[in-house]
Length: 90
Length: 155
Image (tube, rainbow over all chains, first blue to last red; front, side, top):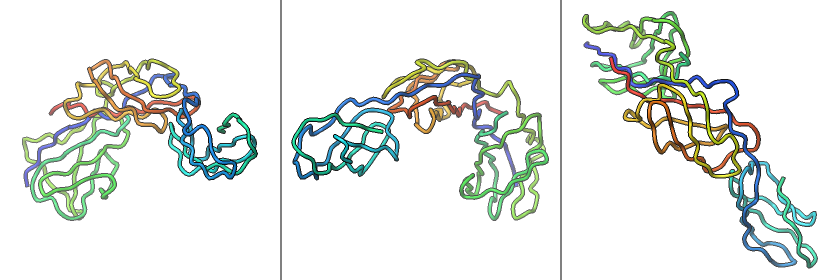
């Protein structure tokens, strides 16, 4: 057998102390912005900093999360009385 | 020095269960940490320092090096890329990051692998001292960087 050794990669970089990027959460858009008092509306919320265990509520009623990535959450509204309320993402 | 270097060993007749000894550390290659074809064996190194010899065994039988080949492998600071800064240092969504440092190569052997926390930052340009990458989102809080360079050093 004949062997040659080829070095292909330089590998992991040494990161200097304190080098980091700090992320913050934002909400940039939601669609649609209105729906039935019976709930069941699928909302798509865009932004940043969402996590797999993020929760969404509107006027204290849960909007049940169906999918979540770092910049988008989809949830289904619960029933509620008429009104306009802010969307809260935790 | 931090390992994670992708090594390719070229030869002939690779078959069976492969193990690599780097200095006094032996590890068996599995599907998860290597690929093997009849004429090449590719795997990632573990962290180490110093110059060590690299030995290959197939089915626990040592294989010999061609006498003109050099099976020394050097872990060293001079081969270790460094990152000294990143800009910007805050983000609230998609962002282009500029990573400054040394030893990034030119990307010709493959794009660098960059993570900011759990999120991938896709490299868009590479020079030896600067990488620009695109982050599509970032988790809340301080996120550290992991930068792995695929730069051909040659032999």
